[in-house]
Image 1 (tube, rainbow, N blue to C red):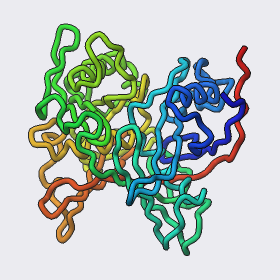
Image 2: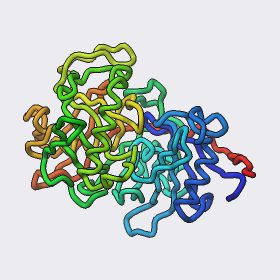
Image 3: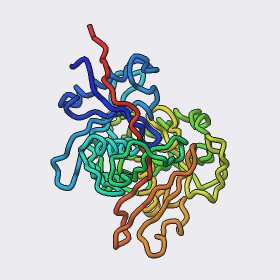
Image 4: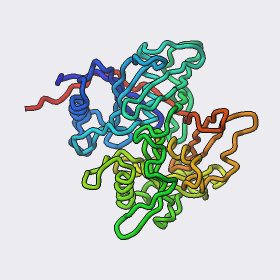
Length: 377
């Protein structure tokens, strides 16, 4: 393994990701994992000896390659890097980091600016999902900074709309890998009703009331129920065919969280969010801690579940929300998260079926750096 890596550090949405050109990394995933563990300082919970951010939303990376697939500009391998453990997860995707990957592609000459908006078509190697990012390129110039903000951060960045295409069954081959819109999961001596869906990423949603919660809980309050949520994730992993009963499941997938009907709550910023400002609440888990907002792949899966008849999300969201605005084929689903309301755009085809789903993000390059890897032995 080389003793130095060149990478670029990006903010993408509510995450931070280290991005690497494919020729900086070994050709196989085992070698990539070894390099990332060393670069991030993964064995330490603070990642003190590396470039990791010591949280699930800031300990991420992607390896980016030009694509040979017709109609696709780039491909990227997403990596969730371990914290306090020398491991790397390649089982999922990250929509926040996808916005950073799209900006990286333009800033590094993989895609040329096309006009006021430049489209970057990407394939995620983890899930084989196709993503389309619309990046703001005013005056057909390569952007370096932007002025737009999103819920979860007051810091501005370059606007990037990230859309997911062909999301159904991306990981398991089935939109509903358990065979139905609802599944009963055995947890300890009880059963919990869940919607298990594979759309963009495998995900499992449980009604907050099943755990005696309201869905308006703070991150700290959700953390108190983390053990139950992780147990639900483990059971869902088996039910969805992602792991065997005697196998340690991935901490990255399925995405797991609580959903509920809208109610008044207070966001992390102190902003009062009224029930009428959103359509469904979500409190998600990211690896081994509550997510401070919502992962974009989780938002995509939740929005897709809204269109599955008799699913949990479908039963919570009001019928009129799922009807397109007059003269369009687009629907906006507003999700109440700990940081505020995040909207997911759903675009329908001429038959009324879900064609693609997207979320508006912002991105910015933070650093362009050589990372010195620790010497071993």
